[in-house]
Image (cartoon, helix red, strand yellow):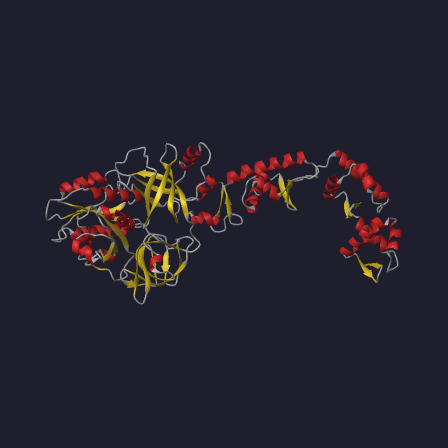
Length: 605
């Protein structure tokens, strides 16, 4: 079936990047498949050399649309090639029959292997010039041991049309077998081209992997950048109101000039991403790279369509490394990076992001311990493994790192690992018990002190710890964490002094002890406060201590006086002093048990 230009909607498109050595016929092949010239620049067409990314599409057998990202093969334009390959899930790997496997064939294979690309079609071109068998055997040997080993192979001649129908059929099978992206995922569109159109303004293009884009959507330029609005959208040459990944898309943006959204910019769902300049990764040696892998300190990292300098710190003798990027990037767990030597242009390794927000390495042995921790970390984001490693985390941070979290999970926006919470609960019980032994006059500890003792960053995490079975011996009361069933833990001598004072007050309820009498009983400020917390005594006014029911008893006794009564009459009725009567009357009024009448009168309500 002859390919035709893709202008219809059809089924979900497949985005496929070309790969292969310079002058092996990648652009010619795309032109033959689509009828579209992928080389956009006059210089490219004049020199017959692809310099920058080109784009074309066609409808294959069964109505499947294939959108091609045509990449340059010359080593001087490898950064352009990597910008096009980064977000693409499949490859059209081209090897010329009359040239065989060449240096940029190997370099492109290293890039695809580093990105973990597993799907593609191997195409042996220019079969009108030489039999394809030798080139096919070389390519098969090179692909062996890489994720692309065993992909279908087709021999073609774009000049004569031989093999093109078989290629279209193989591409249709490839397109139909690609995984379905998540239309509800957060948007991250890596810009691979930006330009202006008269009357429209700024236009950017890129490959949308996951998520959905709609006209009118707001996006941010980077994780913390300015907001832009999608004014219009095209895909496969047609205006669209919305698109879902994986798809090639052109966006007309409002809110940014063309130089503010260059290649390498990430357009993101607002508030759903975090930027990072440091990440811990698992390294994957490239084809033929020595093992165990050791990388130079200064390299170039490629992710999406961006390239940035990166400083590499190997984590002990392990396949793990810490990367310090020259630019802040919106990375998530599971993202794939390419690490390229800027001097040799070789790609010795790829990397999978395991932690986009790693802890500092400050102590001797931290790198080794970190490698041991990362050894148990899956490349696919998982809330359980993240919490086991971190202990606790904000839910919004987990989601920004690409970790799925069920709706309604956690407390106050936080999650904590169950095992960590149990261990902290055990520590908290011991901490409260020790504080009670150290200071029996003040049972328990303030909740804030408990949070600091456990090094918890938020009070909601303390609530989660207290909810664990291991914390059943504790309860929260009036802002303090105390032992459940605690009676205050008053020392025997303090309880005895309080009992003696209560007996005096039973005989004469309003004869408050003087400061000297309290001192003789051994009841200082802290002992009296402990007695008040235990409900044994109540402070009526500064330094005036009576039984807890003294206020109600006073109101009942004063009700027997003719209203209104004076403070002197009240003092006589209660058989007490002015030192006690005046604060007692003020307290009665504050509690609404009495009210003022005239200048000096009172009555019980």
